[in-house]
Image (cartoon, rainbow over the protein chains, first blue to last red):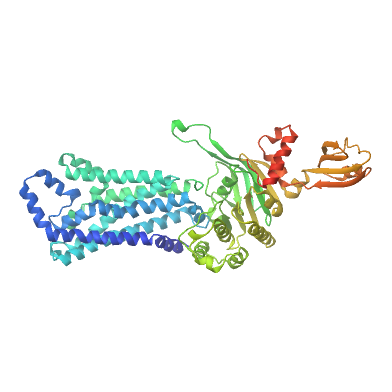
Length: 269
Length: 329
């Protein structure tokens, strides 16, 4: 029964996942190409401009275009990547619980001998696997693109799994927060609103902190800050970052695990 | 042992934690005591908002009761939801389906989640006149009636011991309603129990063994359909030649009206004493209009009907209900 539910959930989200994989593969390939083609020139131009403001803006969210690691890091924090990942990070949990609850299909499903815990676990696993796939697709495209551009030797390819693991951990932690919102409301809009506010504020704090040195401290309050892609590509993994993201994931999961079975399932609208 | 037993079952909704929303809790269901026995078709009556769907949703574990208890097939609805849902089929009111799936795909999927075969599917598809071509189309292309048929099939295809059906004939045309009611009858003969909510009283009258009437979350009546009907007033009209019989003191007779040689009255309970008196007169024509469940329902249910002293108003309401065939709150 769980296998049927698992397969069906993957199938139902298949088009969405494939579209996001294609988008992230294209995006993941673009920045190493840009770096290989124009990175040195852009870097020299900015350095020669002697304009600190321009240098600040050039290192957006811990990424830049002056090194291959910087380009990959920029690809990770860029709004395009965030938006594509957001389809699964935010859209999937919201649609699969509160969306189905609002439509009325959740009660058709839960009229079967499936516990809410089992349903939640299946949905969470499908979401987590999808996100692992999406992050892997983007990184693989970046590596292939770097190889194609002849700059792969600038990268410690052996450290890529670290970036994949931390990128996936961040995405899954944010998805767990979306699941928490999804199990807490009867209608889509409040759940979506709460999740988007959390993700966008967190993202904004990281961006502001990264481009404005005087406000660098605010990025400590962003979950995005704890995936330090450039450091990870150099093989530096901070256990604190793992613990923090893991802690957020654990708390959000525990919350959903407790709340989902205890909440009344409102009549569909 | 009853298939369904509720004892003092209640559901209250708090008004919310915000000071602006604080107020008296909404009492959706209060102290409901219902027992449904094996092999019966049980009708659960009440207009919109009476608490029918709340009761059903508690039975299925979608809502948590705030007081009392309920058990289905011997399992507690709060603790043993999984055991219950293994043995129950459920049709939600105004069912929603996965629009992107084909009819066949949807039925396979929903049957697969029970983890057991669906022996009744083929016969249900045939009886409800869904073609193979229909079942190959995506559900999004289905009409409301076809969706309802799919809802009925998914609820019954695995031959559940108990089927809980929330307004099952909604959206079905009269022919399909007829076919569906015949299906229920067959399921009863196969020993299955059916619990269905409705506000279409003619179908309840036709197939149900017993009914419960719920009003504003409270049970106001529960009895067999036959008992309920026997208690109802019948409308009598007799064309009499010569002297009119004296109906004073005849048990069950009320609202006597004699005009132009026509005697009109309401008759409640046993018809014997009334006919005995009538036999003394020269009766040229006699009509006893059969009691309708609508009238029983109205008496229990129409707002403040119990307090209504004006019999004419009640009769008007009954006529309106007869005409519509559906009771509105």
